[in-house]
Length: 85
Image 1 (cartoon, rainbow, N blue to C red):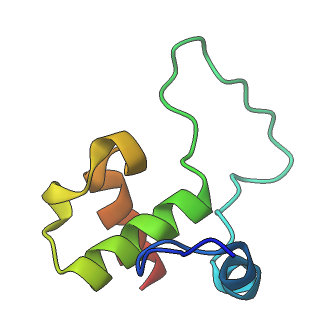
Image 2: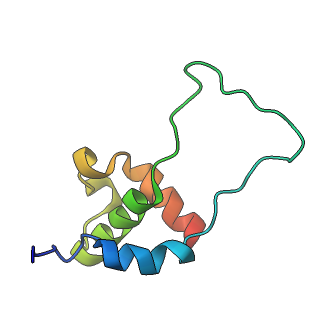
């Protein structure tokens, strides 16, 4: 059995948490939307966002101190935290 760091989200824990994550709001139904080339980033996976939130809460680091290599944009993680709160 591999050890999981206190801020890592195990598969078992994620299975329990995922149903509690709010579903991303869908645009107006009945309309067709086409994503333009270079039209921004694709949404960050919810599990990655959740693990970033857990990292901040467990380590006590500032949002801006989140390791970019692992979690991506700290402002995105913080914005999702505020949305999910």
